[in-house]
Amino acid sequence: MKRRTFLKAAATAPGLALVRPSNAAAALPKTKITRVRIYRPPDLNPLFNQSNMLVTVETDAGITGIGEGGSKDTLEQCAGTLIGKNPFQTEAIWQEAYIAWFYPPGREKAHALGALDLALWDIKGKALGVPVHQILGGATRDYCECYATGGATPPNTPAGAKLSLKERARATMEAGYRAFRMAPSDQPIGGIYDTRSVVQRVAQDCRDVRDAVGPEGNWCIDFHQRFDFNDALRLCKAIEEYEPFFVEDPVRDEHALQDIPKLRQMTAVPLTHGEEWGLRWDFNRLVENHDVDFVRCTLPNVGGITELMKVAAICETHAVGIVPHFTGPVATAALVNCLSTFSGPVLMEYNYGGRPIAYLPECLDFKNGKAYANERPGLGVTADLTQLTMIGEVTEPGRRNVYRRPDGSLTHW
Image (cartoon, rainbow, N blue to C red; front, side, top):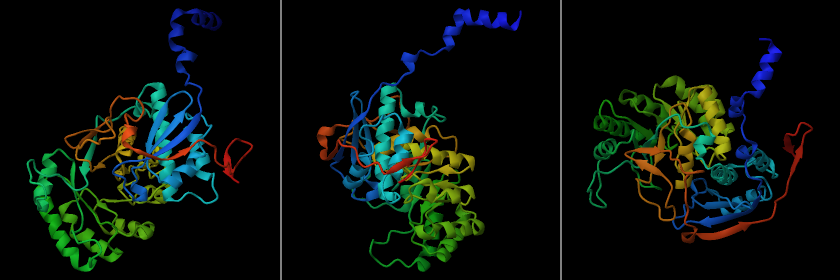
């Protein structure tokens, strides 16, 4: 058969219609953002970058997205960038919001931008009738393994009972968590903390925890940035034989880019850092140089799903895992959607203990130490706004302090 005859026959074949998508079925509805509302939950976390403030983004198509994070002031300023925009253009909105104001966004503003970005992805999933993890490429794992922030307690433990590290570590393993997490001694906040004197005592605690979780169990320790480099190194080397899953925040945040590469060369313990960091430019050097084994970037701190997936791509390129810090429950549900699609190692921090959250009748699917992605549209979260207090509303566009280059890209004004 001649080529021209073949192509003509193929064009008239009835089966060809099966591979041609319907424009009507594929199109997202034409819509624009009309209003952003800000809500204070009954259990508001006052810390900026662990805020569980709730935000809703409304559209003229009747679809409302839910996000979490930020503060009233930072959310209101960032929200002005959204009004009148197409909510499905998440990348364009993110880029403009990032550079739309005079100063580069600090971590507090990135947190607010991230909260709004979560809501935009929620809208997109709801409009398509699919969970966000499907839009991001589909899940690569059945669940995300977790570790409990404060460990678990054995069933029927009396309220207020003080358990030993060994008891908490065993209970955490029995509850199905991947790892038990500990801190370097429980000194009262505001008291004296002599990092040099506690090294050997913390090392003994680590030995006890290793005994408790057993040779097949896992444990990790958060240094909480309490240690200067020399004491951080002493403690890392002292606990090498107990094989921690990771050592978190071993040095002060301000010194991390200089000190962690040196630690990497001088100790064998796996390292992670970055729970207080925001955007990818905070930690990309550590990832690209393989100076950390995991990053602690999280939602919405990193600027939302739009930014987190770029961070995930950097981590995948350099075989670095993601151990996200916790913030609020909606952000945790969003993390499950995102990290379910990540091909590298994942261990999620989880501190809700399976407890229900009254104003979120649908949110996290958690069981036996594991967080599961679900098939509910968007982020899979339903909020009862009657249990929240509305504290802000934005309906007018904010300033657009940007220029557009000839190729269409944005630059600062």
